[in-house]
Figure 1 (spheres, rainbow, N blue to C red):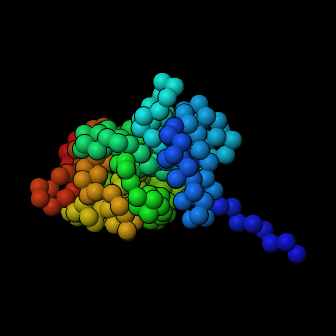
Figure 2: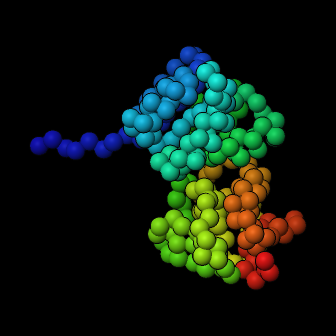
Length: 236
């Protein structure tokens, strides 16, 4: 009797430097991933249209007129691809570049040159942190309502558009209102343990969450020197 094969985790590598592509593909396949490559945005979209990957490694600088940031924004805006983890690959290591990459929709950021072991660890981390906090119930905080079963957030009965990371972050804060959460605690509870991203990444996602919440963003308070909390009693 033939056993049913378990599909391998599929990783799409969007990179135009052949040596880097070969190195990444070898290590991905050795680690048990199903890895495919695309050298530009058109080829990457073709791969995604054929089979949705479980994660994307996306180079910042690409030929063809579309940068990695352009592609990340495009895929985050598409319901089919919005929850696929994206790791940006780039030679740009300034803090402003990292913030731009995360603001575009990247889940993580790795600077070239990188070690294959670090890259594999980061891929495993983004895959683990897709849902470390169980999203199993509806919660309310002031005029905000979040229903995890249908991935919906309402403010005064009007729907809000949140990305998957901001959704998990808001869900955790709403489940623990008025409590101050350090950056390290939020990384652990929302992203999952053993992550390889900097604590300051939280600041970027808090900024994005406040923007997405509009008027309700004032409920997300910064506690100087301590972290963040959700105050459902904040007057709006």
